[in-house]
Image 1 (cartoon, helix red, strand yellow):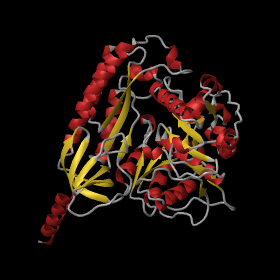
Image 2 (cartoon, one colour; image 1 turned 180 degrees about the vertical axis):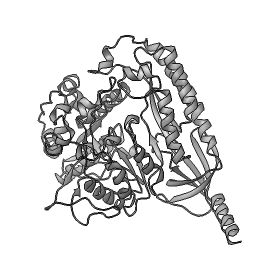
Image 3 (spheres, helix red, strand yellow; image 1 turned 60 degrees about the vertical axis):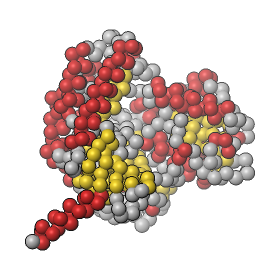
Image 4 (spheres, one colour; image 1 turned 45 degrees about the vertical axis):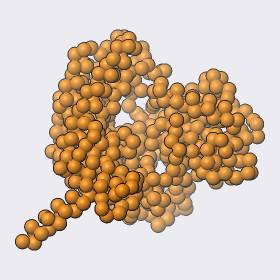
Length: 503
């Protein structure tokens, strides 16, 4: 079920109220905020929840089977409440007319409907049936050559919407946000001190287990001037940390003629007034360049945080996945990172039970995890996805064997993450406060902790704190992946150091 902050708005009696329900990742959150802005511009009022809405718009996820089922359950629950129900997002895009036939309770929209979303919902509210699209490979909607895509806007890209202004706005030097230029078409939903910022859409990689490129399309970067303008807007709307999201952040800029564009973008975003931390997600190990490591490890305001998509550590399995690397090369990459930033946060996800995975392959992965000292480890069992090459590979393992491997590796991962958290005791860390717990206790996240997936840090402080404060604290304990820290002890250490320096 979505959280309460994913059901938004205020209600009026005009008969044009819509509840937006967001499922899935941070990329979907950005897409929903574009939809919200477009709907408000079109005269719709955001409802407080599905029970108060004329139309419920569910931004679905279609990544893996569990996410698909959650999306279907949400659509059925909304329909049971009596509202008109509309499915958008990845599940809707991926299955189109097939989903409409299987779920007559909902109307199905494509990404290409987003630009006219208010008119589409007008039709739905009037009782009209919108013809669902036939699924298609969205990679074919843009030129094969990345450099040709910017001049060929032949398909809608969710989360890329801006309102253009006259004249060409040049990319600006670091630290300077545009006084005029692209205007953000986005309405923040749910608030909070962290906001996702979509830097690109789509993916050009061809991993054999992944269907995302087929329904999200080819890789397209957003221009730096648009991102700086949106970062400035987010800061004005309460954001203190920016979480940069895409299907593959390390490809940013390749279609704009600059493979190092992320390295120059990050300092610009970190310099936006009001933003205290910028975090990058979705890094492909094969594309992590030394220059990018240096920027992530050594730029003020940029979290030394490496969200590396390893997926496995056995060379043969990774070749079957059509991916780079092995245990040795991944270990060398981690050494590079820690040489520049010894306390860097590093997380990764892993698929177990991939077709053809042997006991030796699994042992190789276990050994890598034991050596890697990752802060966060996600473990997923392999399952076939429609239209993927892996679904046709030989050597599929029985479901119960996959489940057993997931259970064993997840148990190991829990132990290793707890050990890594305990290693951080006695470190000083900067924590972004997100919640006041009471009694001088606050909840936040350190630089190595991304929202929702990497644990949290509880801080004790005699000095009152508020959400959005960035506080230096001494780590004094751990509980699993979570940390306990003391801001007063950190201040005392700093004062002691100051007295020692004065002598």
